[in-house]
Length: 74
Image (cartoon, rainbow, N blue to C red; front, side):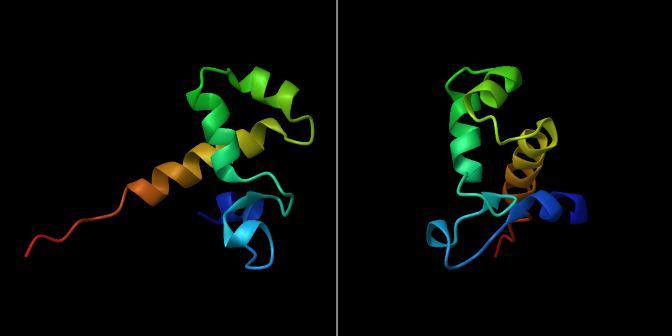
């Protein structure tokens, strides 16, 4: 998780506290939305030149880890 948090930052003063890429105003959800709309990783990088390949991968890993949490049944 440390490698992800080097690239994904959360600042309450930026983007409403939503997770962003390396302190920029590019939200993780922005990257995920582009991928979900059918853009390839290369196209996302063209669309957002400030991003690096590792940033896109960190967004995917971040989302995966957020969704992969245990659910306790009572």
